[in-house]
Amino acid sequence: MNIHIDITKDIINQFVEPLSTKVIDDEITFNNTLGKGQIERRNFNDKIELLKFSFQLSIPITLTSSNPTDSEYLLININLSKFGVHKKVNDTSISVQRNLPIGILFYTPNIEVSSTSATKMPFEIVLLKFKKSFLSEIDYGNLTILTNTTKVLVYEDLDIDSESCLRIILNQESSKLKAYSKILELLDINFQKLAKREVEDKYEELHPLDLKGLFTAATLLRDPIMDKTFSIDELSEVANMGKTKFKMLFKQVFGLPPISYKQKIKMEYAKEKLSSKEMSASEISYQIGYSHPSKFTIAYKKYFGVLPSSI
Image 1 (cartoon, rainbow, N blue to C red):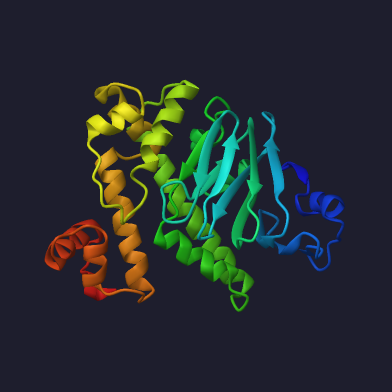
Image 2: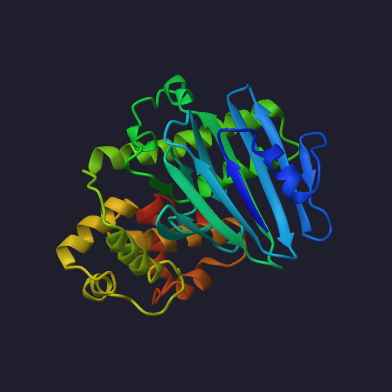
């Protein structure tokens, strides 16, 4: 099944016909032939529209979403699933996934995104839609990275603070006011990151092959418990470029040098495991490659400013 969505129009209603269903109380339920699934919509102050997708499909669905060049809207796609969602953004293939620096994808003007959802796997995805003019209302009107139509691939990491905001937003017991305040907090966290990237980096146009090489190299760094340590020489060779160019472009695209990028993944993974009480600090330290828990404690304190035991 193929579905095409124009994000400048009412999103939820564009699913009604292809899914052979209807909207009831701002919610769509998938018919049984497709598998289990719901799409829920919430509007906040006529400023922001939130859509939550929860589904486990019986048949694959290919979804193509477009945001025209002259669009007045921006869309934020956040994957809360345990599984990556593989997307083609214009001519670049990426995976949007929790606990990776590509957990949040911004649908800027002049972008088309397509993905095919895997079957028999549970997914949870959140969309936030708002007008570009809203950036000025919240003092981010100069954030040109989201409105420049020549740089369409914009994303950030889904850190633990952002995910914490989302869980409160999605909690049915949260008041609408509290949910809205957490949406603003979530936006502020990530717009601050984007603003920092704009200041620090002089962006240059990248050839699609350069982007492909960078994403290929980044995939080698994304597993927090991977045993092998990749050198800059190995990573730049995988990216098919020289070391100097690789380090410069990697930071431009991912916002961090390769070593810092890997450290961020490890630390965010550790923080999540500590917060959920799934593992002890000692267990995590060995899992992510530290030879002794004391070394992990030092690294964690340096990164977050608090000891693991305080979580």
